[in-house]
Image (cartoon, rainbow, N blue to C red; front, side):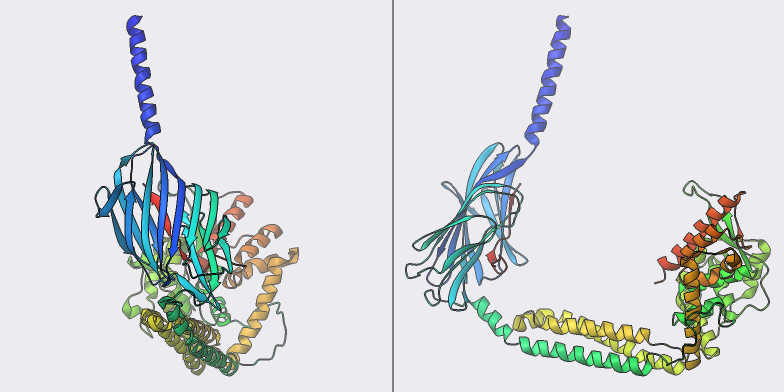
Length: 587
């Protein structure tokens, strides 16, 4: 029993030591005081002394830092650091400090002996040139005394500003950011703050008559005033570019935007012509898109050229059934764009490639129909993911094929296509000029400040406007505009069917016009309407389920997969203006 008690005591002591070590290793700290003394000199500069008392809990702590922004000052220099009687020397070792430029700030980092559960007081002094600025008939001191970035709380803080003897009377003193109580006594101004939370800064402002301090306005403010003289020039250039671009957009749109057509009917209850579904979608969209190509595949399924089949899960990663297309007997009257669509969809299964070859992408090339017939004879299943990837990877080549058919039918006009390229090229040129102006901004900023950015923004906006107008200009001929207007009217009819309450006499319409719904982006609503009305599943869709409800659920999932494929891959006073601030911390 005595041995058991001894072992128990040893285990308890070890656990106590582990808990004590874990607690002591947790680091936290706060500033018991953060005092700032600002002595303003007659030449407009100031000597600033920051006295910070850190209370460290846990540890060890070995360094602290202070970031001081250079913005709205001529320079910040003359750094000195001390702790009681110890004066820190420049360097990177213990009891030393180093100053380095970090972007637009000066970072002071000092290192000290490892400290745990103790308080240490550090005094940082530096010189700020160009602190006093001119604001109208007054001079002003604006300074962010407590940095807005500090990951510790501050129990108490006092900011003391001492002005030269010839300054007065003061026109006012104000807290620009944070919370503090100001007080004025002669040429001294104090700001008292208590319980300052983490990342809460304190910016102050003091105003007095102009001319009592030399060197005002400072060099940085004179530079800003000189740069502001160029503001009308850069604003005028930006406005001129914007006006010219606007006029250009209006002229281009009025002349080449679209051919005027007569609207005979706002809604058509049936397709206005026998134009294939994919070409009708490309006509309406001013060029073929991925949904038009997928609609072509579904139309070919309706014509018996292929079937969409639900497949069993394969592999450990696939837990749900998938979908694949299987080519059937290819009709003899397939048009070139339909053959190319099938070929791109089956490209990986047929050749192992994901991109059409250079010869296949050449103008006038013919898709190898025998490859498709071989896949049909073999009964090869092509996963829907491969189908959408094949169409997406070769979308630009397929677009040329679709466009070629529309040109051959007289629905697209080569002349209008060439004219619409003018604003597109102009938009790209304006974008290039904007990028060039951004590259030259560092050079311009030295002389003109930020005002050249107005021209850059005008170039970007004008380039975007010209580009959008060029892309919106129709490539359609007068005949094509009339046909597109009619197809828009038919599309409105399909939208009504998709959004309204379907009737029993409309059952056949939903299966027949499903490819059109995919081309026009209505597939989700269309599938739900088919389920609501009890429309039969398309003959080209084959589900693994035996019950009708399961089959229709699978069909809706397939439509969602097609939709994802078609749309997923086609293509008072404030602190503003106060100098100082920055960050502070320890570790």
